[in-house]
Image (tube, rainbow, N blue to C red; front, side, top):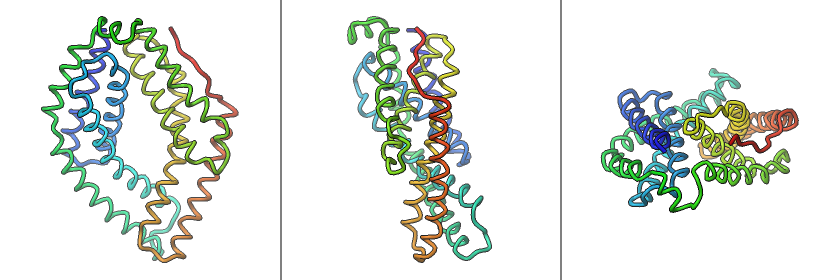
Amino acid sequence: MEQSRGVFFAQWEELLRLRRVAIKTSDQNDIHDLRVASRRFRAVLELFYPSVPKGSITELRKSIRKLTQILGGLRNIDEALIFFQSRVRADVSADKKLFFNLTELRAKELKRIDKALIAFDHRHLDRIVRKMVEGLNENSIKKRNGISLLAYFSDVSIRQYLPIHRLLTGSTEPERRSARHALRIAIKKWRYFFEIISQVLDRDYTHIQELLKEYQSLLGQMNDITVFRVLISNMELPSKDQEHFKSILMEEDALLLGKFTKLIERKPLVYTFLM
């Protein structure tokens, strides 16, 4: 339980530290790191949710989720810039217009993020987190679950794997984009779960974590194609330019789907949990 409290609070402190850094630098990598930290803290919060004092947990959840969402827009734009810079020419009129639009969007997102980070009520939320950490103990686990902490972790692991098992079936069919999107989220949650319990239980889950990361990365690239398609659709571009960029995305989507199919064949994702 001491390890659990330590991991819980360490994730929160890392989020606060990265918020301060992002406000100071407005750097792309710092903002991305903060977004990842917010996701990791949400994973910790959800894992220990049944065992912490409820209090203002709804407010905390909502605030952290809102932070994650606000930071996501910039990441999508930056990834779009990287993607198209490697596939189009900066001296072509249509491509120049695309980069101009993305750069304008990026500037707006930075302003929105800066405003949100300053408005983030970290002092109030810090008091909530500290009460939660203080109330996280063995008695709270048993009282709310009736089982040991290790048994609880095992139960969570099984429940997190089940949607992955279900979504993997037929996930290589081209039209099942929504299923692959849901699969990516489920895999990410299971990966964060192993990150947390590896610290709490002092066990080595490196193999499954690396495999989950490989799946998550590839599925993330596939999801990016969908996001980029939406970005392009929302821009005021001539129809022929729209079609040009969308054809590039379609080609990349097919390539990534082929890689995903091979990954499933070479490295099937099966259930594992070390007691």
